[in-house]
Amino acid sequence: MKLRTLLAALALVALAGPSAAVVKVYDSTPPHGTPSDRLRFTTTLCPPIQASPGTVAGGAQITDTGGGTVTLTGLTIEPLVNTNFDTTSVFGPGSYVFVISRPTEKPAVPFVAPGSTAPGGTIDWGVLGGWSRTGFTFCASSPQTICTAGTQVPHGVTVNAPDINSPTYDLGTWAFDAEGDYSAVSGYINGTQNGGTTNGQYLLRGVFVGGGVPALPLVGAGALALGLLVGGMRTALRKR
Image (tube, rainbow, N blue to C red):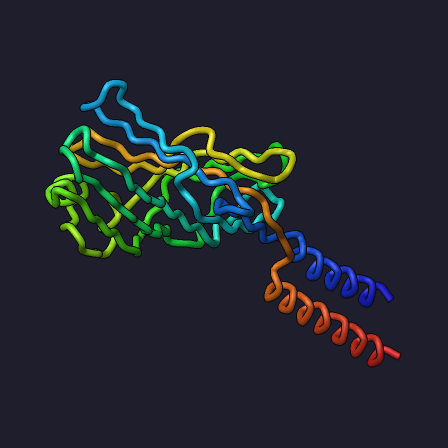
């Protein structure tokens, strides 16, 4: 009896352990999510910071074990640019510039960090490596030199998104509110350009859109629990 009780307890632990890990999905893209902001800090401007609210989309996926560590299993950042304005006051009648850019930036995952996604919890991600960028940029302007000088993309040409500015970025600290949404409270993803005079920064936020228990770990746990129970039954039958 004691052996069967022990085996049953082990089986319950095997089932309960992985089930405590919850995969949570966060969205920064409308209509589900709230887009993040982009900041541009440059010593050549006064004031030196330009803000572009709501211009960074994407989403994140975090597995939280509830034990003080979390795992980032997915993160997509999409700094969207859609510029279309009249430049007559600068370049004269008939001048214009149109830029559309849709890059997608991703870090290497999975990435484990201390923290919690529970309401009131925080995650201190720190520096992530292995970033990659895909996507495109298109520019059209009159005069054509606006594109060439301003975006480094020739007039009327679509080019692949440039390589990531740095192999590592600091995600900083994310704080989670009562609704389960997160926002960055310190540290931004940084990319340095123009010889260090300009830094590109993203102030990330994400809306909680759902969560669930990982399927595969539960299957493994169930198989282990079943094996323990069957083994216990056989042992008990042999003793009779």
